[in-house]
Image (tube, rainbow, N blue to C red; front, side, top):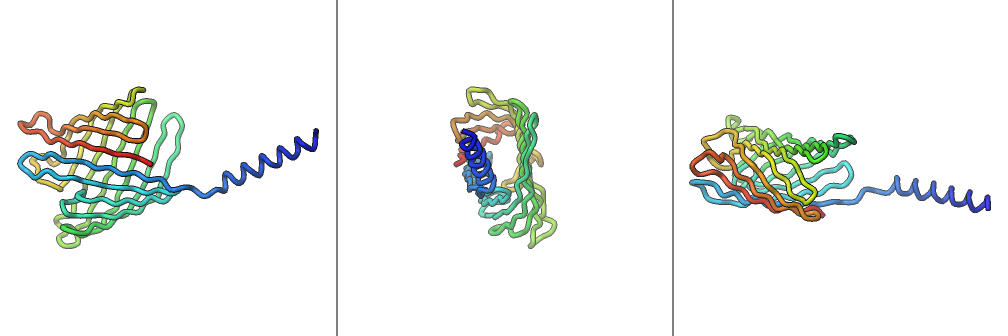
Length: 203
């Protein structure tokens, strides 16, 4: 009996060590944002990510500017219990209509049903330093047990012309399993607000 217990303990320790030593697996996400812009051509902004342990890889199109792509690499950090956080400092390169390098970040904080997410970058334009700029997209939302979330959103972008340097508005989204559909309304007090619809999934 004692021998069986010792064997069980040793087996448990071995399996636990193997589990801790197991290499991290890849995880992926994809998203597409459809912009409905007043007095401007509507456009689609797709992006995708791949993560393995601390490594973060990302690709974007129509993000920094129209007809512009960017590739990113970053380092995943995270922790916390009552307030959980994830932070990914990144470095990216843009090419296409705009060419340049950009340090950036992705950040998320979660406390109970309240969530804050933000991503930003400072693009150094190789062709014209005066055109270098800071871009950000940030959301503050509250989620329900039924998968609905609602809140506030702001962005600063040069992908299209806007009289507002910083645009702000409201969001509502529906989360089902590992996918979400969300709608955003920017500058709701304008005569013609900006609308954005997004579809995203993690796998």
